[in-house]
Image 1 (cartoon, rainbow, N blue to C red):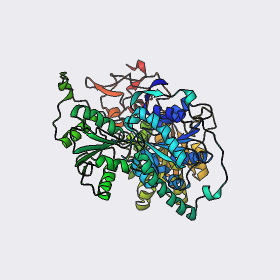
Image 2 (image 1 turned 90 degrees about the vertical axis):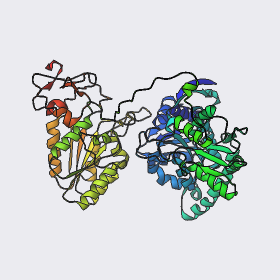
Image 3 (image 1 turned 90 degrees about the horizontal axis):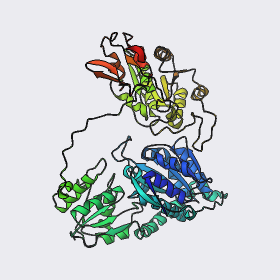
Image 4 (image 1 turned 30 degrees about the vertical axis):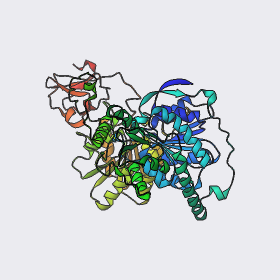
Length: 609
């Protein structure tokens, strides 16, 4: 058995490879992205990998492969599961032949998401089993077990990770390649009574699912990753129930605070009821530590009622644990200490190592990169529409940061592709408002096309602005249909955004480089004057994939210190030094936007001083 220092997502991917995964499909989204990327890098020849157009399509591609007996993994972040729910809710009734693991990475915080959704609720809602690892090593091992349970019970299963498991690192014990599972694919066998969903089949399937989940609750009570620790607790009337990465925090806290009876829940659904009853026996009080919602807490309250156990259950619902955000070692230690009636002593002081007081860190909100073409796109639209009643509907991606001052160009942001529908709704109610919807090139393919069709069909009056930077920038520059590359490394024909829009029926579709400021402004002005649905494609590559060694500078003899460049575009390369505007040459990419708006023509090339 070998060892590697791996990120949690890499460990999950390596576990899937060891399980003999045949197909992996997904859509990029932090904190899940590295799972599929690692499979793509390290896959055996018989494993197919793709970035699908969105999570719904990924789920359907995965289902088709699982129908043949292939082992399949589908990857996404928690909000992506919303998109995949339609096929998922029917797939639970149909079932699968090969093992199918749905990797969903939750984002407590949230650190990089719109929501703090808890996939454990989706597990119960969809009646599918859920596996919830606590460490990187356990994630590697548990994903292999998840495939086995999925295949045995012929059902998709959730593998729910959270940010600290997905992005944590550890030395992982790996199987040798000759110990990997080799999956024999039978192929698709026609059987309309199994693979075609209709009401009578669903009724019977529903009964079978309920029977299976009742059985699994018993099976999971004996599952080796659900267990009870510390029967010799120094607090015999108290217990702690936890799962996921919070278990790791709880164990670390208890090393300092003292031994307490501990229930580890690795399968929140179906809940290991028999094990929980054994844990609760003899206890007076239990504290539940979990992310994100009170799933374990509710289950234990239910079990106490069902078995008439006189145990008080505390957690998020009782106010003993905070109800939002990530857990941390400090928050968990504080929760447990309070529950046990202890006072926390600073661990460094206990060890005799007094630490100097750390200075307060500066607040650094996220901003568009220096030279980002989205800044130029937003600024061109803002200038063209100055003085007019306008709404700017944003979307999910780097360009969401266009909401920050001084651009202030994102009035709404709901979910991927929603800006199109919101713009239409506003316009129907406010005919005097010019409505713009911004969407990135990757998001256009993933979620925006139906919104454009709806706008054309229902005779909306709005302007679509596609911010095409030739990549999926926010999640790590993954390919999409407009890039001409696949995750398998194939070079394919690019899918034309302009061609799609014209095919849908748009008459006004123009592509312009947003870094050509005057042309960009005039294009927006002309588009806004047109009736119906029109589109502007601002096309300029992401500065992270097209590096430039150019740098601009400010001619201080010409500069009138009006600071228009700083006040209006907010590029981080433009700074104040000694009360004068200068350009940070470590950040500047030479995009030229500032030089085009400078009223004194004081900004130019390196020899501009």
